[in-house]
Every structure is written in structure tokens, then in C-alpha cells.
Image (cartoon, rainbow, N blue to C red):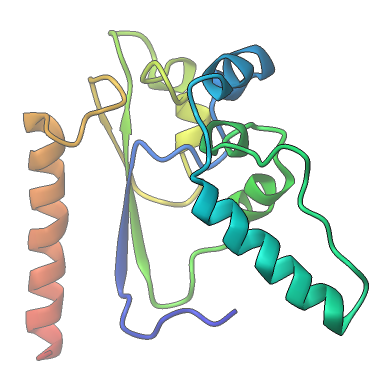
Length: 160
């Protein structure tokens, strides 16, 4: 997979790179009772698998499709693989990590995502004292404004 050449900067806001403790099995089971996949989506998936089955070994849908909560399990192999991927060369990354309370950020979290899941080694991190839904908080907006202002200065300096 090649990086998109026009992406020059990414900002992660309360991103659970290594999953969330809320994706534990009992919570996911509880949530599953309220979540259902639209029949049309399931039929489309089944049709894709039938076509694939004609070209190679038959494939089967899992008996229960995972929900987005289950996909956020710290044990999810795909999530673990994504968490260790490096940021593409030439792309500047930033993290805005929400942490509730006054304790050490490294020991806290935002109620959904622990700091250790949202933090990426080597990526500049700004901690905002807020809960997980922090995108509308003044502190988050101010950090984002600073990041975007820096980006505009760099773009101007390059003459883009």
C-alpha cells in the first residue's frame, strides 16, 4: 500500500491506536444486543463471497460479524498491525490526547481511550484535559488552530 502523495500532515484526536478497554467482551456483547447489520449490507457481503467462491476456494461469512466496538479490542490483530505502522515519510503527524482529571497523563485516559493507547512514540503530543469527545472543547480547538497555523506557514514558505 502506497501513501497518498497529497497527504502532508495528519492530526489524531483521541485516537485509540491500540484499542479501548471498553471493547472488552462483556461490553461488546451488551452492545451487540442493540446493534444489527442492515440486511442489504449482509446480502451484499454474501454475494461478494459467492463470486469469490466461484474463482477459488469457497469463503464463508463468520456466523457473527464483528461490530466497531469489537474491532477496537486491544487484542484485535488488525489493530495491533496498524498501531506499529510508521508514519509515511514526508508526512507530519500530531496527536491530541484527551485525559480526564489532574493526574499524570501517562497514567490516565479520557474515559474511553487510555493515554498509552492514544500516544504514538515520536509524534508530538498535546494533552487536553477533557473526556473522549473533546473535538469541540476550546483547548482542543486552540491546539488544532496552532497546528494548522504552523502548516500554513510551512506551505507558504515552500511556495505551494
